[in-house]
Amino acid sequence: MEEKRSIAISVKGVEKIYKLYDRSSDRVREALGLTRKVRHKKHYALNGIDMEIRQGECVGIIGTNGSGKSTILKIITGVLSPSKGEVEVNGRISALLELGAGFNMEYNGIENVYLNGMMIGFSEKEIDEKLQDILDFADIGDYVYQPVKTYSSGMFVRLAFAVAINIDPEILIVDEALSVGDVFFQAKCYHKFEEFKEMGKTIVFVSHDLSSISKYCDRVVLLNRGIKLGEGSPKEMIDTYKQVLVGQYEIPDEKEHESLLHDEDIREKVSENARKKKEEKKKKAEQGVNPELLEYGSKKAQIEEYCLTDGAGTKTTAIIKGQEYTIRMKVAFAEDCPAPIFAFTVKNIKGTEITGTNTMVEKAFLEPVKAGCVKEISFTQHMNLQGGEYLLSLGVTGYEGDDFTVYHRLYDVLNMTVISDKDTVGFYDPESVVRVV
Image 1 (tube, rainbow, N blue to C red):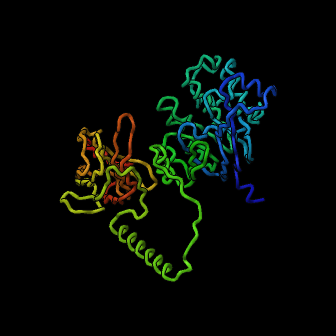
Image 2 (cartoon, rainbow, N blue to C red):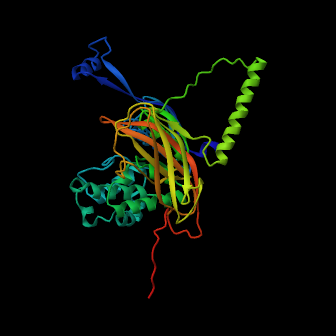
Image 3 (tube, rainbow, N blue to C red):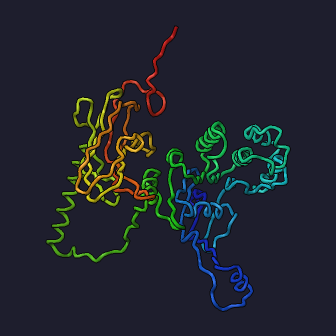
C-alpha cells in the first residue's frame, strides 16, 4: 500500500486511436451499419504508452508536433478517454492545457474562477478564501468583471494560470502555457513553478522550451509519433530529441542474437576486445574526452580532430577565467557540400546550453567545399564563464536546398574546466567596471 501511495500518476499500455475517413459519407455509412467494408484507417495518437510519475517529481514530456504530448495530458486529466489501457491518478489535479479549456466564454472572469474551482472539487467557501490571491496574481484589473470572450490572449492566460496555480493542487499539469504573456508575467509564473517544486508538488510539464525542461525537470519522457522512445535524465533525452529532429535517431535493435561464446577462442577474443575498449575509454577520460560521447550524422563531412588551446597555443582542458582560448577542429569532406556550417556549443553538466556560435552566424565562412578537402576551423574568444565544469559539443551541418542536414555532430565531446578566483551571479561574468564616488 505504501508503494501505491508514492505513485501520483500511473499510465499502463495506453492507446488512443482515431478513425480517419476519406469522405464524410463513409463515416455516416459505417456509423449506421450501411456497409460491411471497413472504410476508415486507424491513426494511433498514442500507442502502448507506459509511464509512472511519483509524488514530488517534476517530469517533462518532449517530442515533435504530433508526437502525442498533449493527448497524453488530456487523458491523464480526464478530458479524453483512452481507447485502451489504464490511467490511475492519486491526488487533486489542476491542469493548464490549451487556451480556453475549462472556461465558459460567456462568463466573466470571476464566474470562471468559481466554475473552474468547483470543477476541481473546491467548495464556494474555499474559493472565496483563494479569490484575492488569484486576482492579485492575474493582475488584469476590472477586466475580471467582463466576459472572457472579450479578453486578449495575454489576459486570458493570466487568469487561467492564476486559477491553476493558486488553488493548491497536489498535481499540476502544464502544457506550453508558460510561453504566453509578457516577460514579467512569464517570470512570475516560473517563480511560482519553483515554489511548487520546493513544496514537493507533482508537476507534469510539456514544453518546446528545452532550457526550461533542463532546468526544472527531474526526469524527461520522449515521445515520437505516439510511441515512447525513452525516458531518463533531461540531458540524455534532450540530446536524443535533437537526433529525432534531424532524422538521425535509430531505434535500437532489441533482437537477441545467438551467441557463440561457448567457444574458448571466441571468449578470449571478446574478453581482449573488452579490455582494449576499457583502456581506450580510460585514456580518453584522462585527456578530457568523453568516452561515452553521442555521435551521429551522414558523415559527408567528418570531424577528425578537435581540441582546446590556451592563449599560448598549448592544448588543455583547463582555462583560466579572463584569458583567451581557442576551440579547434579539423574536418574532412568525403563528398561535395554546398555550404557547410561549423559550430560549437557549451553546456553545463545539467545539459543547459549556455553559449555557442557557428560560422554562418559569424559570417565567417559561406563557401562550397569539394570532396577530399580538409578544413581547419578555430573559434577564439575570452573566457567569461564562471568557474566550474562544462561540456563542449561540436558540429558540421548545412543546408542542401531547403533541407537542413547534419553531416557530423559530437555531443559533449570535451570536458572544459574554468578556473576562477572570482565568480559573479549567473553563468558568465559581465566584467563590470565599478566606481564609487
